[in-house]
Image (cartoon, rainbow over the protein chains, first blue to last red):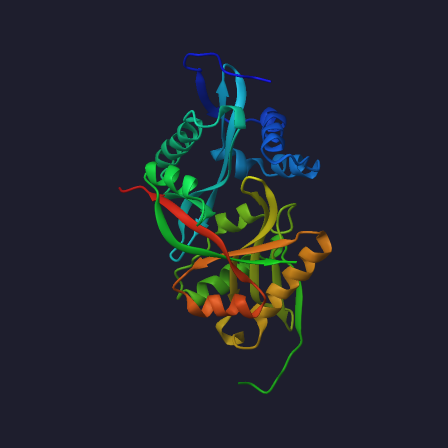
Length: 151
Length: 150
């Protein structure tokens, strides 16, 4: 069980690599309590070009404690190239320390330098904490909504 | 409406369909082309994550649905995301789009993918009605976007 000693932890944001998948899954398990099927790993590794290009991890004192999975996508009419945040996760022991903000800012800088037009995320309209985070980061509510069918 | 009612055949999209798909896209967009060859290569028709289907009439591709398996959110969920549904204008109003969505739904059901999602503009009432008719319901997800100027 890790608890942070007093003082500023050293947070380093770096591009996600194949070897990070176990750490990412461990954080996911910690957040959700769910053990994923191995297919998850296969899918992520099978999608390297798409996913890992815009994905980052946050290390605190050399250990991965957060991740952001994003990919390029073409959306709208006329089609524009955007960065799509798929998953954002921070180890519960390391939340509320600005790690998510640092990861999103790194993604924004990267997308800007790659000349993408925008970065998008779909979030629950009732999740005021997430709204607050993204509004603070300069995001604004868009006009897209989601229709879902559950089988 | 023409009298001939040819059989519509639905099948998974393959790499060899890319040219036909781009032709239809150019046709509906007045030659501008909303989807590029690069998009289609990235979509990787027939690949591990691809869930796209085409609809054929007399062996000719007349419509397609681009869809993809992905993981989103915390907690992660496995979902199929519909990225585009396009039907050749000469074959519209014949239920081709509905059949494409249903082919995707059946495939997802068989593969144990339980959530199918389509992101659309909230002002597009036609599209909303289309998905509602096929059993889709508005979820609580909305988009947040950060655009870059210049």
